Length: 398
Ligand code: PLP
Image (cartoon, rainbow, N blue to C red; front, side, top):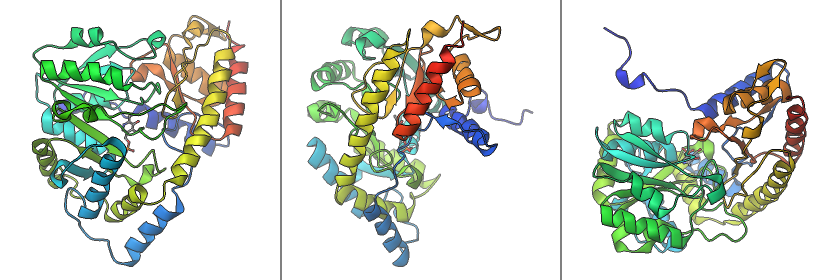
């Protein structure tokens, strides 16, 4: 008898969390590591949101809540979709979970079966393929190219679709590339989904973090037919600097939300009661802090993209949203340091950590080995110094 279940065999820990842990361990030894690894805003959670949580504690709002979230929060989410996306949902079409990751996990458990195929455009967020596999479905990777802004064309998608296709995943703006689809592009994707009868899972967690006037559009808002085939995964973590609070939410067809509710009721029960109250404030309270955070990200984005593009042999796509850059470092892969060849994105990330004392996440983990992911959710000073270190270290390669 083996100890572990078969489903754990190929399961690895999240590489982004692992890189951060390694960088923190080095820092604990007194080594000054500059980390571009974190997938979270470096800002504090806004005061009004924290105060709402304190009030919830003081008022004794510390007990179990309904599994799918309190009515007040569901209504705040419904309002948000109406206000920002012109989408109307009923309470029975909304479920609150313990973070966007948990939302996606429950969704995968609710709709995927063995034999189902799920089209995942690459570069993809590291957690999609493992969560699809844990639900026994098969991730079908749809590669996109840097020169096309990391976006797939309708023809590319059609080639991956067959009778087994249960869903397509869209993450716009994207982690790790920051690429985002326009309304017109989404319209073409919606047509393919409708004519082939598959679902669209739209991860909109970076909706509010967009630049240069990019106009975010939810694919679900393009008509009743596509809305009925779309499940939106969202959360408060990135918009409101609330990564630790663990609140995500899903909107979609009632039948799917109800199945997710059953799964949640037999696993985690309700998400944290205090964090739910804080999330009501986040979604309905003043939004000024969001604008301030996005402006700060924007300043850093301009700087980091410009500097990376000036490094010989490096190209860097200018992201439309989110807080990551995904530069192409592959021209350095055949080079060596002290007789040791840099083989791939992991090799270069290890080199950066060991020699430059800079943490980045290897692109291979996102399904695109020519690249490294750098988060610019860190101070300007660290970005400046980190890039100096990267530039200097690359000169040591021959
Ligand atoms: N979706 C994407 C694309 C993400 O990058 C993340 C976090 O890194 C999540 C979902 C989940 O966020 P959380 O579980 O913190 O709400």
